[in-house]
Amino acid sequence: MDRERTLMVAIADPHYGKLISVSGLHGEELNTYSPEIFESRMEQLLDDIRRLASFHRPRKIVIPNLGDSIDGMFRTGQLMAIRYGTIDSCMFYSEYMANWLNEVSEIAPVDYFHVCGNHDTHRPVVNKKGEFPKENFGKIMAWWMSERLSENDSVKVSLIEKIGMIDVCGNNILLIHGDNESKTSDAAKEYSFLYNVRVDMVLRGHLHTYSDVGVGTNEKGVDIREIYVPSICGVDEFAMSIKRRSSAGAVAMLLERKEDRIVFPIRLK
Image 1 (cartoon, helix red, strand yellow):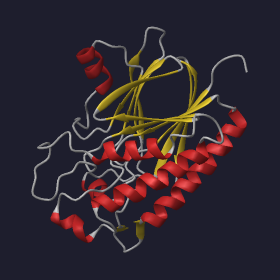
Image 2 (cartoon, helix red, strand yellow):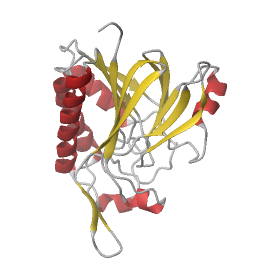
Image 3 (cartoon, helix red, strand yellow):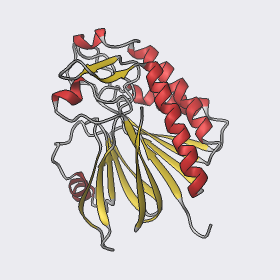
């Protein structure tokens, strides 16, 4: 292999601990979700990563997790739709993901980026959104995974509290959850102007849907992409309320340099 090749696999909105049962107009099942289904989908994703890596032989695997790893407890209506409380969800999810990342690292070295989401925020029912922005269970989850994997030199766990930029094969990739963004905002342009940096790609979650849109071109004429990453949990009442139904999934991408990007949307059963 004469140049660096990286496999990036972006996930979003696992909402671990949430119980989902969404029906269609004729009573048909649109989506069912539970901690057991979460694990089944992550095992399927691991198999997909193995297949992609076996064929493309990446030197590294980059995994951005774009937030809402757990479901949290900040509306009374949620209390009937979660299997575990916030603390237990945080513990069980972190333990599972540490073991999952350990298995991924057997394929290739892993850089894992844990973005904090709005559902990860410690906001017990009575508090309003944004009152305690630093109180986010994502910090604990990233710390737990990092500690669990401290003896595995092939995994690096990084925390992104709100917004972060990573460099993958020369691509400046912006990672955000997206709950503070307008559905029609051009995040690449806005954050490029705000921070005076070049943005080649934006990865965002929150809307539980998949979309890959060109929002301009860089200095080499290569598309600047803004990608909504589908959720691990699939369609739920929030996604239905904003009319953004999408299958559970993830987005894999093979990167070699700024002008070489191959995208593989992954559907999870």
